[in-house]
Length: 183
Image (tube, rainbow, N blue to C red; front, side):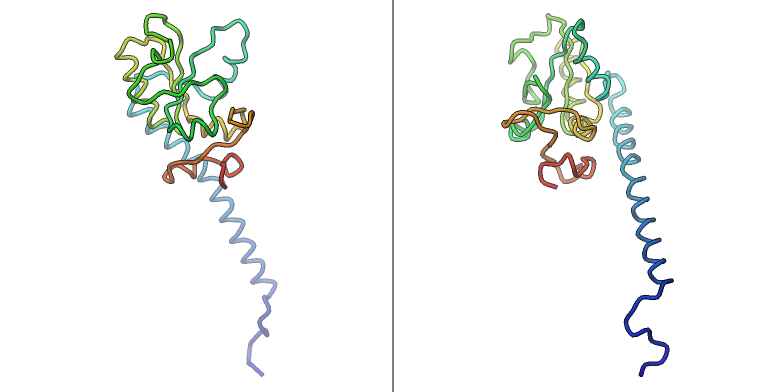
């Protein structure tokens, strides 16, 4: 017989410590997600202070107003990501191109909203469009990831969806598991 052994069973104190550690870990994970999102957005704001931004809620409201002129939605992600899902009505554009490639010249003055996964590519594209004469350009802050994280509708080959391809492993953690195409 072993001295002081518990026969391989957990004591109530040991179980309580494990549950407490698991709860602390879960709480830290929940706190980390919004902190990381805000840090990412703040870094992009600092790098591109002159570019106008619109958040997901603001864009959803704008798109839902029947009396407001609709913006031209421009997706600058990879073709495969766009084909999997995109904002309803969005056009895909290469990063070096302009909306003129699908019939929206700078002279029209139409509002343009650029987005990508989280914003890192959208801001430089917006700057480029402004230099080319597009006056009403905004970036969807948080990109399609934040749109999907809020459960807002997207369009894909099978119709409506709320899923996005995560793409870049460095930003995958910003996309909630329920919004990922491959959790």
